[in-house]
Amino acid sequence: MILVIPAIEIKDGKCTCVIQSLPENPKVYPDDPIEVAKIWRKENAKALYLIDVDGRIAGKPQNLDVFKKIVNAVDIPVIASGGFRDYESVKRAIKDGILRIALDTVAYKDLELLKKLINEFMSKRITIHIEARDGNLIGEDITVFETIQKVKEAGIERIIYNDILEDGTVNFRALKNVAEKSEIKIMVEGELNGYQDLNKLFEFEKYGVDSVIINRALYYNKFPCQHLWRIVEAELNL
Image (cartoon, rainbow, N blue to C red):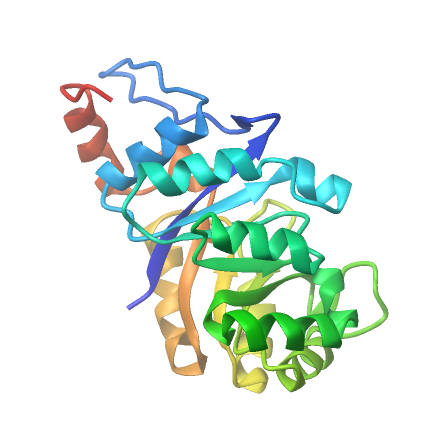
C-alpha cells in the first residue's frame, strides 16, 4: 500500500499554496500552516511533509518555530525538509519532535555528516532529498544511482526522490529506472493527476517505493475522496 503524504510549503511563516474549496461549498481556507496541518489531519492524513522554502534558498532552516507548532498541533508523524545541511539544525528539529529529517541534496557530498547523524539519531530519522531530472542529479555531474550508492555507504536506508516532468508530475520512467537498481526505500515527491497516477505507483512497491508526497494536486482537489471531505468540512469548525 502506498502512503499518501500531504506536503505543506512554508515561506515567511505562511503556506505558499492555499486549499481550493468546491464551487458548491464556498469556503475560505487559511494560509496558516498550523491550521492547514489540522485540516489534513481531519482528512485522515497519516503523516505530513513540511517544506521550508526559505530554508532551501538560505541553506539553513528558517521556519523551525512553525515546524514545532505543527508538531504540537497534530498527532501524526512530521517529516521536514528545506535547508538541513548541518548537525545543529537537524538536532534542533529532532528535539522539537520532527520524526524524520530530509537533508538537502548537497549532503551527499558530506558522508561524515551523514554517518554522524545516523549514529546519533538512527537511520529511520535521517533521509536525503534527491532532486533529479531524467535520472541525473540537478546541478551535478553524477547520476542518481551513483548518489544513492554513496549515501547508502554512510548508512542511509531511505531517500526522498524528486524527478518530475515539465508539468510537475512524477517522471515514472525515471522512477522505475532508479527504483529497480537502487535497493533502497523510496518516498516519491511529485504531483499526480489523480487516482490513475496513484495506481501506477503500486507497480513500484516491489522495488521499495512505499509512499508519495503530494503538494498542489491535493490542494486543487484532484482526488475524488476530497470532494466528499470538502462537503463535510462545510459543516466543520476548522
